[in-house]
Image 1 (cartoon, rainbow, N blue to C red):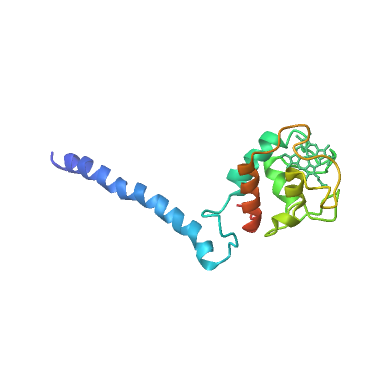
Image 2 (image 1 turned 30 degrees about the vertical axis):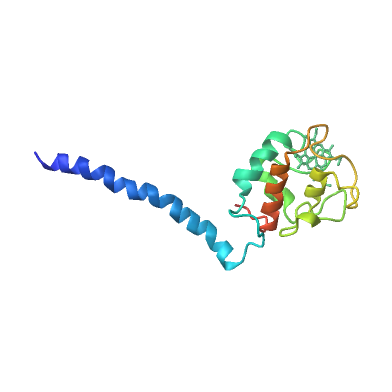
Length: 153
Ligand code: HEC
């Protein structure tokens, strides 16, 4: 029988362009908001993702103290609750919002991470409380995500 042989010969070739096409399509979708000028940041070549970039940091470094919203700080930083507790929500320690989309320097969370929270009108400790500061790259990523509109992406 010739047909199964032909089929198995053609099959790998058929799947190859599909695999190669995936990143291209993905990059096009990611590049589209940049091209339209929706993303304000000049130095981010790829939009930061709340789910992929921010949530893992919150899980590893913040959630243990900010879980139910009853703790000092009144935030729920578990994955499913974190966005609603942060974005566009006024902080308890200052007049700033915790995260102000598009404006990292007006976002109290950034001040708490960088230790500039008192100068920004807030109180208390640098976050994570009692632990090492986040790595500069992690803070830069959170800044970039806020600059890009702090989307629930
Ligand atoms: C060891 C416990 C602990 C950890 C870990 C911790 N926090 Fe906090 N956080 C607190 C406490 C207690 C307060 C209130 C007192 C203060 O601000 O110092 C607070 C307050 C805050 C506030 C102010 C909230 C408001 O509305 O005014 C922010 C923002 C914050 N934390 C962010 C974070 C982030 C982001 C992380 C992880 C990078 C983190 N915290 C990790 C204990 C913690």
